Image (cartoon, rainbow, N blue to C red; front, side, top):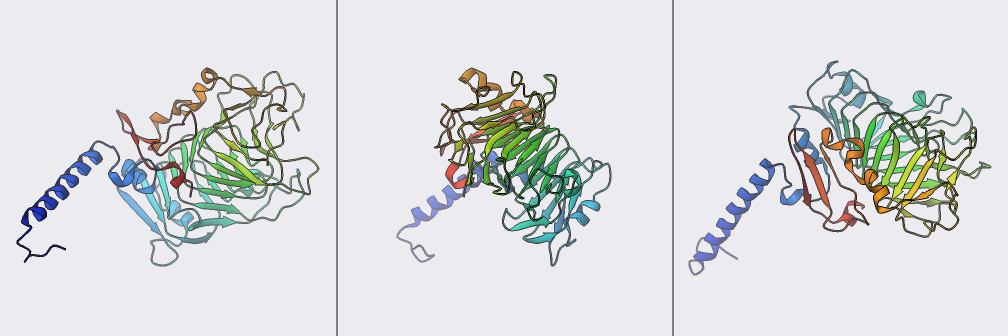
Length: 387
């Protein structure tokens, strides 16, 4: 232990001070260049997003001591036609409310204290998916971090208008969710329209867990399925709606995990040109061997469907009994679906993690973007990010 009276080892004290100074300078340069500092390696976390978004205004939401005690009240306080990023920091707690980010309020960064800590919940079933949703994003350029969002409506009659209980509706272009959790029994995530990015999210449901017409990447997301035993037909994780080849949309799941209780399909055709890709995904026994379904596909034609997998693994990933119209993609065929360019992410995302050809390793990078450049930096342990 060093002290001011320890004159026998002055060189060590001076060396230590020099090293600290050099470390500080190096870290400062990394931040200035929009590369990660040593404590921001690999994972796209709240400090990194906060640094990249760089808003000049932060609104605090807390059940005690905040500017607002309601997330919706904080959103309402943002001026219509907002053109500068505003951060709404939602402290830990359970917020029982329905939340809508209206179309005229873009550039909002909603920062929770972590899934399981900051919880937005409601309970409503409806014949209308939009009406039932707990959390709706109707504005462009919205980023959400660290929220658990739930629709706690009890399970009703399967495959009926009385059983639509949406947790999240993403209904605008350029919307991103990082480290969030979505919970419902049926119709959990209404990925309605636009380009979306989901990073390290947890999605739980039973029937049409993710459905809609959007063009979205789900990166290292966990999907936990709970079979609805009251349903005669098995549910599906995805129900992507695409009615023509001219519609530029589709769901892409990269480096994720599918598991749960009971058995479901990877997806069903919700349109003649439905497009879903699972790449480098762990698939458990919770997926039926044929994986893909034509339930409610009106004409039954499969020639234009694009239900595909690429190098998936796990006990449910065996391909010998897959639906005859489904595809196992080659390295070349999968390339467009593994790139962030699939959603033009370099143009609007504050940060992302590139898809790996196999499961990400401890050296998996994360990327940030500026107005005129992009950078990817090797970083933190992938397995740590899944905890």
